[in-house]
Amino acid sequence: MYFDSHAHYDDRRFDDDRHEALLSLAENGISNITNIGSDIKTSKKSVALAEKYDFIYAAVGVHPHEVKDMQDADLLEIANLSKHKKVVAIGEIGLDYYYDHSPREAQRYWFKKQMKLAYDLKLPVVIHSRDATEDTIKICKESKIHGGIIHCFSGSVETAEIYLDLGYHISFAGPVTFKNSKSLPEVAKIVPEDRLLIETDCPYMAPEPHRGKRNCSVYVKYVAEKIADLRGVSAEHIAKITSDNAKKLFNIK
Ligand SMILES: [Zn+2]
Image (cartoon, rainbow, N blue to C red; front, side):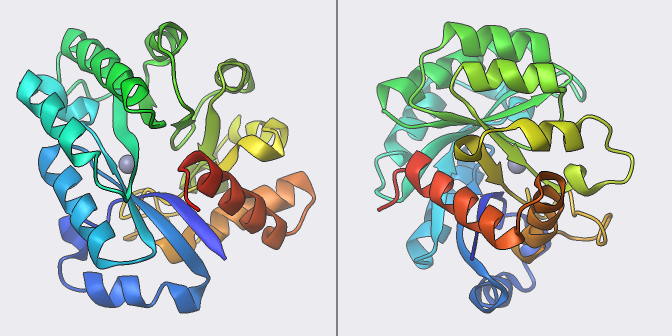
């Protein structure tokens, strides 16, 4: 059974069939999901999904795209939401210099603030970093953590090694299956067993052979199969270790 460590079932693309999609997961090999918030509204929706479905856990936080209007009151709201017993992480937070939907200074400011909040709350962090490796590493080095995930990892072996040294988990999504992915197959081979995670980031990032379509947790098996193949182990083994790792990191009994 697979643990999809990063999904967005609050997304409107699931509005027509969310309940059916979620109910069909167990029979398709999915045991657990962490649904990730990206602003206050979707963080609340993540908590609501976790309340409604046993197998769903929630992360709450404000994505770099959305921090342009963030205020201290929002940080307080995140702290309040995190008190719910099924909130297992702060995220997704980080830096996105590819889209630059928020000014970079605001991105760095609220990333640091939310890193500090997660540390104070004794929760792990879920980090989004795109075209911002240098600054993400800098902030990660300055911040103390109770564990963390570099979500949908897309960097080099060298970058992965820096995050691993800092105590982070590396999570792979659809891109590791893409035919043009250059460094990811190499990274997938070197991440230690106890730091490896898999995710879909659904509805985004569908893996091969479903690239371009709406993604769902069932497709996490393609990510696992690709990693298993690269590491010369079985997909069942990848399912087991990534599921154990997710439970340990998210402190799920
Ligand atoms: Zn995401």
